[in-house]
Length: 305
Image 1: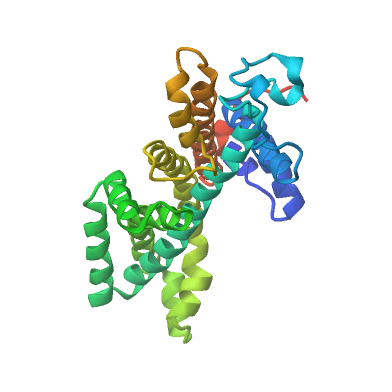
Image 2 (image 1 turned 135 degrees about the vertical axis):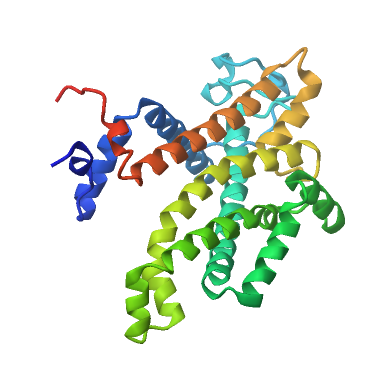
């Protein structure tokens, strides 16, 4: 048995989870990224369960510096210009920023996967039409399309998700089409056609399982990109609108206090940087995990039992 074959996951769910855990521990950077994302998710869950409120105003604590626990542990990251706890507002903003990014990515993934598989399998005029429309959308910068769309239709959460999803969808269409063009020529697909299988059955049972890992890897990378776009749009005033809050909006609101209260803009900016970097690191780890020829890299370091 070769080293790569020995790293292959078992078919059972429990064995696969154990294998994934060993692979994650074998990559310290991916493990650190996963820990950070777990911290962010824990903050989002705590906020939504009512553990703390980001809208509570305490003028006595306005612009309170971080790591001062004289007003309680909820203000240990400081407070903003209205005395609202920065920790709670960061958790509330994380819920909006990550929620919008995930919703936009899932929407673009679903639409791009379906359109790309149709364009790749059917071809002809339908496939050409899908690809030409995709090329037109890709011809415009994402941020420019988002700015124009939100200016015309208004800066709402729904419009923000739709604009970001549409601008990212061509990437999924092109990747899915390229994968389908290669897979549809394999012998097992030809055998299914001979035995009378229809296009939908072949796409669902033969092609989708092969295309899905590549599409999921692309989606995990796009989460970080969409988060950056959302933060930029919120910073410019076309994304999340007050009284709601996102990390980009917090940076915009805190930039006027950089000389006196640097933490108001620094902490949400740091949260954006760490979260996007963590998504990128985990996307790279996921790509290696799903590549049988690269899995040895995850467990190449010697570990003590």
